Every structure is written in structure tokens, then in C-alpha cells.
Picture 1: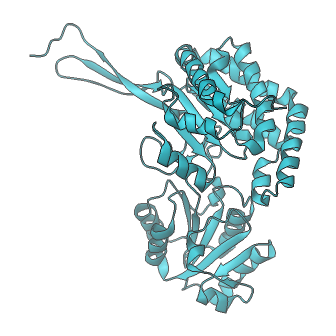
Picture 2: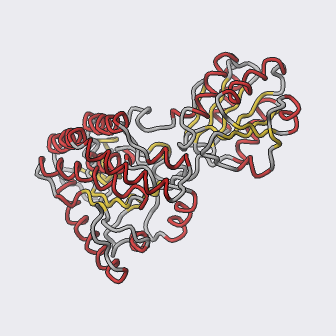
Length: 427
């Protein structure tokens, strides 16, 4: 159970204390050896496996509360854990453990004519605040990634996943203890009061170095508007798939259904399908029929509605909507130029895919669209740090400063310069 909820008057004091403890833990964590961090992470994964029954029971309570509160099906899917998903959590931690330790890595080095040797070296960011909703696996992913990159982390999960996150955090605490690392290196805020988020946005008296929000549009908007510390923004995933006239349409059929329907509630789910008008109607129909047969509602422009009788007319709002549901907006476009113009107008700069065999079309797509992730002949559902070989991710950053795309261990570091001389003075 969550235990006693602190009175509102105590939130500021509670959060200030959490910030101080995180800052104190950050220093020894920043110099922890790769071997020590490896021991902790493996112990965490083992603890998740060992505590699977407890985690499932906690999740059942969260699911029951969510269903009672009328939570949307897409959010319930994000919240749900089963034996397979718990196994995936522990496997993700093991994958992170096996990654190359980024701390101390020499990014670049060079010599100056005066004999100075300069190195640019990766360093931890310090203390990271992660604010997230629904997904209890983020508790494990964020904790493990921050530990691997030498950062202390303060986790603020959503009230809807509070029991699940608490159970997973207990496993992470076991790992820290096994490696003799500070218990305060990974802290989970013990209250669900929204005032705790407000205190994080203020920076916890200078003890918070960066905030990463992972959740709905309203959460991210609040964080960006109110935060007094840097933010790695994870905005909505308004993802597009463009099918060119040169595409292998059998391949396109497989990719489109997967991109939309594999998991409709994830940020990498395709929300808009753009089809080249030059594709013959008889060849376009199977693309739409496959989606419809998979249970997807199609909202199309006038040309699509005329072509496919089951389609509903799309409104202007549909082109800028992240459905997170079995709904997709579909439009016929006049080739790659029209597709690029549509994507650049409506995209949230998260993930876009092109299905084409014409190399010139692909190069235009890659060069002229400014989104964090661009895919050729592959599903948008690959927009995931685990699929990128990062073990996991804290989120997909859609901004352009510091981190962009999947935020993994390298993106959770900064750098410093080490300059080595032998007596040089500047004239």
C-alpha cells in the first residue's frame, strides 16, 4: 500500500528533503565504478524477477482503480503488467547493465600547437527529475538508465500507477543495497499530491539539474511552462506514414497495420497515413481494408471517403490529433513534395516513416523532414530506445537542445574538458 499521504503543508519540506538527499547521493554515484553499477543493475533485475508476484498484485490494484475511475482503454494498456511485461522489465535492466559505461568516456581529443592536450569527457548531469504517467515500467527504465549514467534520480509516477511503481522501486532499492550504493540514488516520491510536481518544477532549491516529463500533452505543457530548470521535452507522438507510388505495396500492407495497430496507445503509433495519389485505386484499397479488418476506424479526406465506403470524413482537427486509439486519419497526396508539406505542417516532430523504393524519394524524405526519428520501409513502432539498442529510454525527446530522439544513457550525460600541459603560460 502507499501508506500515509503527507498533509499539503508538508509537501514543500518533504520535497526539499528529497532534493537534498538526491544531491548528496549524486556525488558518490558520479564516481562509482562500472563494476559497482553493474552489480547493482543485475541485482535489480534479479529482484524484479523474484518480486514478480508482488508487482503483479500491486498492478492488479492499480488496474482495478483505473477501471473504476473510467480510465481510457489506451491508458489501461499502458498501465497493465503481466508476466511477459515484467520479464521484459528485468531483461531491459540487464541490457542496460551490459551497455558500455558512458561516464569518463573520451568523446574527442586533440593537441594544440603549444603542446596542450585537450580531451572532451562524458560526465553525469547530476540529479534528474522524471515525471511520468500510467507506465509503471518507466520506474525501472528511468532508475536503471540514470544509475548507469551516474545520475541520481527523483521519480514522480502518476497516481494511477502508484502501487505498481512502489513495488518496482522496492526491487531497485535492493540492487542499490547489494552494490553498497546510496539508497537515495533512486528515490520515488511517496505522495500523489500534485503539489509535489510543483516543487520539482521550482528546482528543489537548486538540487534538480534537469526534468524529463513523460506523459500526456497537458503534463508536458505544464512542465515546459512552469519549470525553472532545463527540460527534455517528450511531446505527443503525432506520427505519419507516407506510402509512395514506388512502394512495394505488399510490404506497405504489413508495415501500416503494425505501425497503427501493434499497440495503439504508444507514442510511436502511426496517427496519419498519407498515400500517393498515383497508386491505382485497386491497389490502394487493400491498404485501407487491412486496417479496417484489424478494427481500425478510418477518417479520410474527400478522396479517401469516395474510394473507401467505410471511411468517415476527416475534419481539420483530425490532422493534428494524437488518437492513441484504433483510429487513423488518411489522406491522398500528390507525391513526396505534398507529403513533406503535410508532415511539416502537422507533425509533432516525433517519428515519421516513408515506404518507397525510389531512392530519390527516400533522400528527400530524410533531408526535408525535421523530426527526431525518420524510418524507411519500417514501422513507426520501432521508435523506442530498446529497439535502438539502448536497453531502454526515459522518453523520446522532440526538442533540439542536448537530447533528441530516444533518451538513453549517453543522452543523460554532459561533458567537461580536461586540458593537460607541461608548463604552458598564455602570452
